[in-house]
Amino acid sequence: MELQVNVFDVWAFRKTASGIEYLLLHTSQQKADRHFNGGRFWQIPSGTIEGSEKVVEAVVRLLKNFGLTAAGICFRHHDHDQPGRQSSDRHQPGAGQGAAAIAG
Image (cartoon, rainbow, N blue to C red; front, side):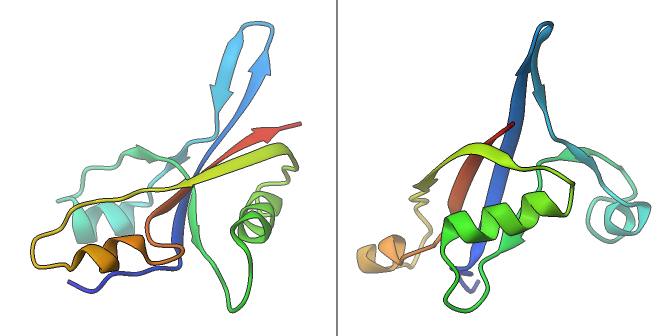
């Protein structure tokens, strides 16, 4: 398994009078057939950091695809243990980043 250090997930949400709403995407049938034996499911948006782009810039770019602008963004690095990896490999910049975007 190769670690992809430029991939991130986004938990985009907004607060409304009736509660919190999240941006969820319904997988395509093609993806469901290829990876999940045909079972479609809901997932959060994800993307990749391009070139020298910063995480915040990548999140802003991703949200624009949905016509959204973030009122605030916070992010964290996820440290997942994987067999056979050196401890220094777990702390590569960008590895397994997640971001939360509050839609304005």
